[in-house]
Length: 209
Image (tube, rainbow, N blue to C red; front, side, top):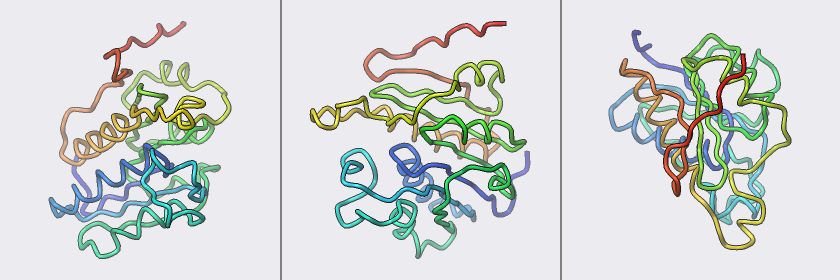
């Protein structure tokens, strides 16, 4: 695969995983002088409940997450960050991107990304665990692991209120950065993974034929 002169990267979701992924990827690409455009898409605004496990401070409350995350990189020379305050609802929103990182808490946007023909990584986290799949994963496994469900935070219910913030989302964001840098340098693709900081590597359930 030949890296495009200015790859167009999309991060869907500006919460714990997506926001940290942006903060890992942008300085790395800037350091190696990789000209690129990174769009981060999310319609949410910053709330007090986001503080502690997302990349925001009290001064960001009330502003769009994407605006708060990208402003700090306005003066970077090689990486151009684009905030997009839409939510992903239609396949047409995924056009004109070369790589997609998806880090949302809903299955419908994930499925839109899974149906594209560009390289993608789908990241999820709950508590101290994380899981990811890529366009190279078995489609049957990806489909089985993407059931209908209600929106879910990367923090276990009640964890923040109890002062028990957990950090599986950090591993998920690091996987996103590792995957993208590897894609840009023709390295072997990451294999899907599910693991826990506390318990280590976990096994995927068997795909039912």
